[in-house]
Image 1: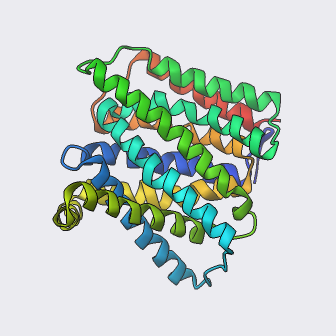
Image 2 (image 1 turned 90 degrees about the vertical axis):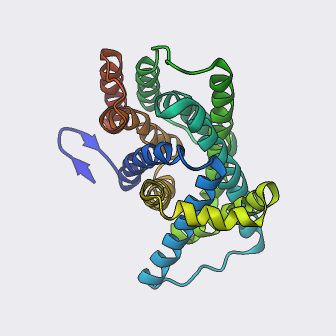
Length: 299
């Protein structure tokens, strides 16, 4: 896709931007859901809804399920364990403790993680201009969260930051594991295997910690909660399809830069829907980050 005035955006970059929009919406809905559901319950329910969505998508499309070999299945299961079962659980635990604003700044560690791991695992090279654009995005995000949070205990902040860092590192690693497989197999079956793995592990975690009766209560309570359903559709089903597709059709480092715009989108959505203050620093952050994202695309 070519846009006038020297701005070039390929299909993978469009997917990455859509990922940021869908994921940001999901985060807002998940924060609302966290008022009535635990992090583990939200993770289980969103994964289950995601699996149903992926199965439905495959049926509608009429595609045959790919013949993954044993090694590929192993990689998909490991990715599902690290990125979906554990990584997403850490993220939701961090969101519960920090809220949408602070989790956004912690999430800026995702891009550096992708850059480093992509270099180590695949030898990917990103241009100096792209690195500068990425740095500008991250700088804007940091500016947006320089203000000290109110009504947050130090203990909650410390654990929230720790969970957030762990979530970003696990997510980055789990996605990069998939890149060789995504080069030869469709995106949706890959997501289906990953989230099926995550769902099974979440069921195991919940039954082990709370008992089998908690499983029934979780589904009974969660499926009657509209924000959880909307968050799962946007933040799990649609965002994951766009997310994996973005990494398939563009460089991992460049996709990460566009995905990072979700932080800015979260700021705006939190101001509109959660009534969080939109200060001058946050407006400056929006401008800075968007300029950085555009710089990545201009050559």
